[in-house]
Image 1 (cartoon, rainbow, N blue to C red):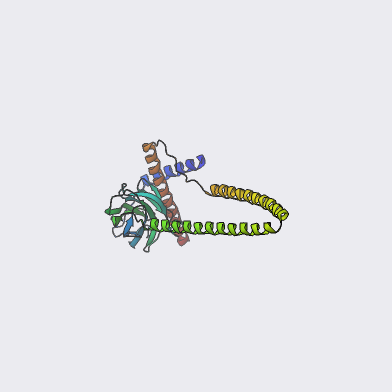
Image 2: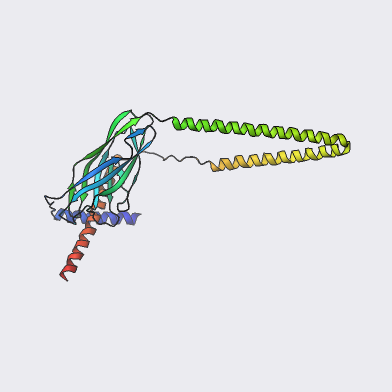
Length: 293
């Protein structure tokens, strides 16, 4: 871990020095757009909403003529939504999320020049979320073409929050009542069967007292054995049920140095962005040398 951090620090210092000694000029005709969409326009309290981020109308003439990495902010009402997870695509890495800021790059460090989805962010609607329409925004989006960072305009999507849907809970309660009724019927049938068995044993006892006594002793022994086995089985089932139940794990929290966390996040962003750029520049240099040869 220390070696990895040391390497990142060295690479970051070298790349920052290179960038400080060089000037980067963005072509005037470089442009692209971002898109933002939700899987549902209406979401109930307690449900999840998936926000998809995409690129469109990519027209990059400078650098590698495409977008290979990006940084942006995802803005939302924290009293309504809470961040759940982020996912990438077949081409793009899973976005790194920290304090409403997202960062990602392509998996092969190559740029893309066609419209496509680049990642998703999943939010959970809080149980006490304010009802009505709310807006999720994608702001400060800056894409990299391996030579320069190219900003674009903000985009947003609207979602309407509805009351919690209790229909599913009602269905579950109905199923539980039905199961309880079936269990009661099964118990009643078992009692009737036991009663018939007792009557049959009584009739057999009238024919022979000795057999009746032996049968009674044997039945008592079998009953005790069966009851013992049943108790063991019930105990095993209860133990198995307890073993199958897994308690949820709640992440531990503690004191966080906000300033240190912010510096580490910014440092990581710079390191990742610059590392991607240096890889793309190295590729470009190799291509130019191959053309000269």
